[in-house]
Amino acid sequence: GVTIAQVDEDFKPISSTEKYFACDTLLLSIGLIPENELSKMADIKIDNVTAGPVVNHRMETTVSGIFACGNVVHVHDLVDFVTMEARLAGQGAADYLKDKMPLEKHISILSGAGISYVAPQLINPENFLNEKQNFFMRSTKPMEKARLFIESDDDLIRTKVLQHIKPSEMINIELRKEELIKKDIKSLRFFLQEEGVADGNL
Image (cartoon, rainbow, N blue to C red; front, side):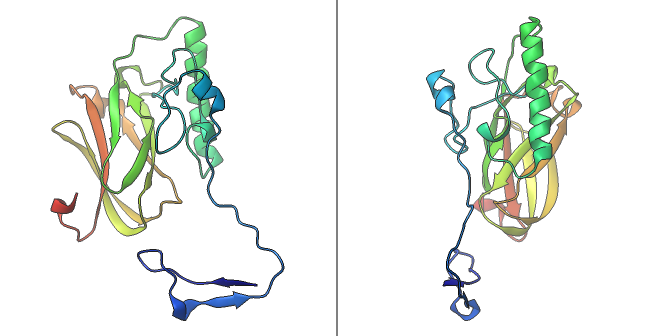
């Protein structure tokens, strides 16, 4: 049989919530790890958190002419997001074959407090394909309510209040080209601030 229970803030079982179910077999599907043997063989840089290739806004890896998207880059919840990345990768690959890929001067994308990773990890707003860019990320822990901050080197780009955040559910944030193009930005940092938590804890 199997015993299940709710967990507390530290993910420890709460004994008063335990329930027992008689059964012969329990099947679990818990997490995925991108398969990137080919990426490693090609000397593509791998993100330590996602275990997938580091990519830019066109889904191009750190090796010129090699593009990646979907679960090989980071594990997705919705096929809609996979499709979004696939279109970017396809257009990027087509432009590469037509010798239309501009020289890139990338902005580094960094994850701060409350964020485990952000993809893509590199961007160049001047060369956004659709005048905008979607950023995918996951929180480090569940939060009922938190504010997402997006900062450049010394400037606040945008904030957004998010509800019912879970590490198992991807966060998708869209930034427009004009929000970034006029600034001499070297890096962007994404971080979460829980409601009621002091800034000093960031």
